[in-house]
Image 1: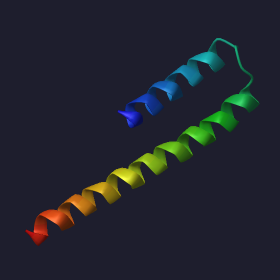
Image 2 (image 1 turned 180 degrees about the vertical axis):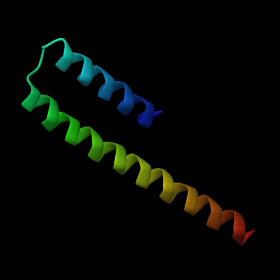
Image 3 (image 1 turned 90 degrees about the vertical axis):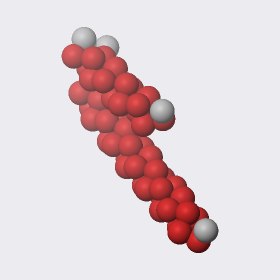
Image 4 (image 1 turned 30 degrees about the vertical axis):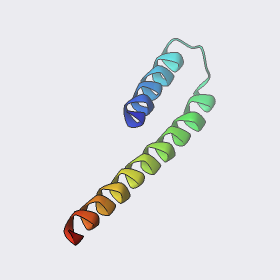
Length: 59
């Protein structure tokens, strides 16, 4: 769910730039932040999957 929200924010950010509500410099700075957040989400999801897999292998 959070990953989907990050994608939605990414799209809205692009739309804001295209409609000239924000400047290119602001867009690129925020885009970099969104990419970092999406990487953190992906890492968290992978760690949770590994933890679940390890727990199911114990039983």
